[in-house]
Length: 390
Image (cartoon, rainbow, N blue to C red):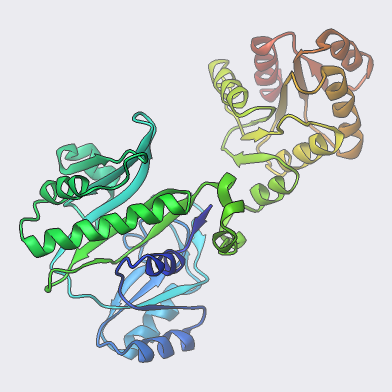
């Protein structure tokens, strides 16, 4: 789950992570009032969407008067913001964050993320703040510093000193400040089951203080039960409507840009299925994991969500009957076709417990657009052929 910048900064404040003062608003008059409350004389008007690169997309602008706050708020609020982290359709800006301007002497990049290779969190930093970190990684990777932190040890002084030296911070007071900043950020990361915290830019002021000028956070969905205060921050308007609907039925769904709908149980099998479709010359239209309890209702809902995509020309159902028997899944698929109008070919490959019986059930169902695949390769090949009209 992701949250807005203003929400991330609310959490930062609880841990003493310094940030400029700011107020979230949802209208132009409220933006002007917020600027008056903050006092100025310089403000930053920021679009609030769940994506990075807002500044480059025109969603973050500096105002030097209340009139400019009004003009920029009118310009940004309601715009469709397209960045390198959104799709081509962009995201509608429905909220603004009006923030005090900061005394910026230097800009840095700072994040805490999980390093899957090392199997522990890492603090990632760079002197190239305010830039796309992806571009820095590609063009000047030597400017990226990684400081792994073993959770069993926790953040220690030597981690902070490695970070400070790596960023070229030599002033003793500034070293103390950046170490304190990173320590609080790591504590925040661990105690809230965060998947990622990104600050870009982190700025150093003229007094040697460090401020999180921006803030982006993502959390482990599986751990939200331990953090009801964070779960309450969820903004469904920022999420894909089909993904939200799928989650209500225990389905994990992500839309893609292909022509073959995929319905699979298990994330690993889903990835393998999509790879096989690509190998056979097709492209998947989605990732859809129905989990280990596929039944007529969940399969029907899966069909319904997949078919919302007008590009879908065929559906490949690839289920491994481990926890649930294949014959039960086969009957569920047949019932699902009665519940939902499935107007494209459906290719079904079942393997596992009672797979032969399931195959016979499907073949005897006499459903004109239902095709049985013998194995994964055969099923994928038939799905590609069906999508191409062969």
